[in-house]
Length: 570
Ligand code: ATP
Ligand code: MG
Image (cartoon, rainbow, N blue to C red; front, side, top):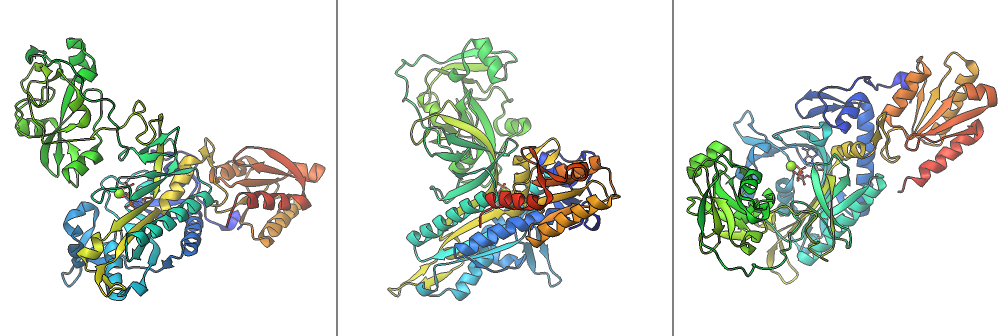
């Protein structure tokens, strides 16, 4: 492609609306333009990167034996009522009625539609195993669309759904997808990690998330330095060390703590460490207030709490909500005599003679003990893991790192097939529900994550497999016939070898061309300018390493071809 004939509207300035690097660079490099909140047009350069990811995804899904189809985006509400998700899904599901007053929604995911296909078409054990996939635009009315393509309302997803006769078959399908995902992210040239993920209501280790490692990632990943264990923070299981201390239980005492509402100020005032205090946090679990007890220096893991309570959504209560529910101002809450349901982190059960709020302004209680002074309705692992905790598998040292979730593999079991009656007849003549799995990749998010992981101050540094153009040829003397002829020759030669190339033939200063080439992140740059006139050589610049080398015109294309081959796999 000739730059003069393409459409890559680059921006010199950083757009104010973009908070994260990938969003900023996508706007600056002419990838995308915003239509409205969370909804973008993919301009030619951005679309080309997305198509490259799609191509790799498609090849690997086909290699794994999955079959491509395309399902509708508009879905009838009735299907969602059958699965029970119409009520549960919440406002992320965009609902509307058509001209005949039929309730409909825009597909945020396609379990319902594919299960409908399955119940109509898969009747016998001979019809399975089968895995269907599509690459398609999804709509989720996200509460906070942000960071450009990272969390859009409209975005491109690859979703796949497997059907098997039993759990063994489903496990095989799961493993195939897991392996395909590893190949996909490897082939994209990304540093990634597969981590155990929370599988919500289903439970068990039936879910892995694929994380692109990047400092800016929204997810925290726990990795063991000593074994293979890797998990999403939400899922990482805290192993209790030691049981209840063998201390004598002291008498409970009320202590005046004027104006001391925060853990640190109470501890300072009472001259104790936060590990001797139990804090009481109020959460709203699907709107119901629940008090959560945990050690003063710990943080609640909301996903664990939601799983314990069987709640769809938990959120921390605001001061007023706490007061309305308990009659106690924030900062002085405690489990002794509290009027709402209480659950405790397991660690609290190992503590003795601790400090809590007295449920009265300006007072705390000391020498409080569970069982003797208060009861809880449930105990579980409810806190965030830290690097001081041991690895739950081998006891080794943990490390925390940030990641961006780009893919998710999930065993569904018979949740949808039972609800929607997708049954098959087994070899023994018995009717059984199909066993399902679902597997998603956020294709547009992969491109954003690739940029989060690979950039510098000058712009994007595309991994070769995703780069829309692998090479850019800069004509640094558009008024010079010799230079122009050499640039054209290189351009033709690269095209002949089927290497995607951008010829910068614009009538611009060399400085502007260098800047745009760096911003666009094209992996290899060929400078055709003075050194060609003087010495007959072309300068090759590696975008990632910054390394510069010179080659005669008739050799440089082969050098690039080999470089590209070394970084792409098929
Ligand atoms: P998240 O926790 O980030 O909201 P999710 O758990 O809702 O993701 P899934 O339902 O598993 O995501 O969807 C499959 C994949 O689709 C995710 O792994 C992610 O890469 C991508 N994805 C999900 N929501 C969005 C979004 N709003 N914008 C872009 N990609 C998304
Ligand atoms: Mg989501």
